[in-house]
Image (cartoon, rainbow, N blue to C red):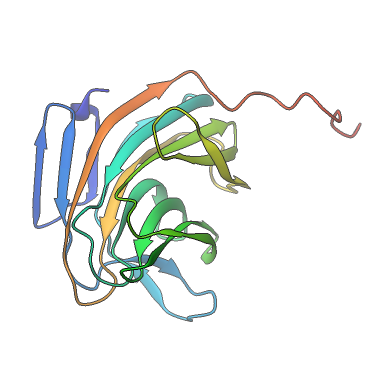
Length: 201
């Protein structure tokens, strides 16, 4: 991928871009979340994205969060349309024993959060975001080869031109360096459903 096709939605104070590597040093109290349960709205995480009108594709990125060390430190894949319509997937640091592998989908100003716990020894994760029109699939991999589904979702405002890419943030009083490599855009790896046909209209 050509990183010159990417642009900052919010530029971090400290970052470096070189060939196919993007490094972001997060600032404290940065996050993406809308309303649900916590009743607050956080919309200040740095986001680095490109635009596309392609309706069927997959985007893969390798994330290195070796330096994360404080609760909720996170980095991953994102599709940020505007402050109230976006999705993200990442690993969030919790403690020295485990961390949270999760995803958040926000439609019309309300976020949800799906997650599972993984060993804190994991320091690299590949994420794959796939699009089929206005439906999306998020997958993850520990080796960059075998991907497992994290979730399928619908984006109410995600039918036309979209923006997608990477993000990193530290919701509490911390900072760390997130490293992104191996970014690729490819033919959609999320194949069409081959089971029950759609209902007739």
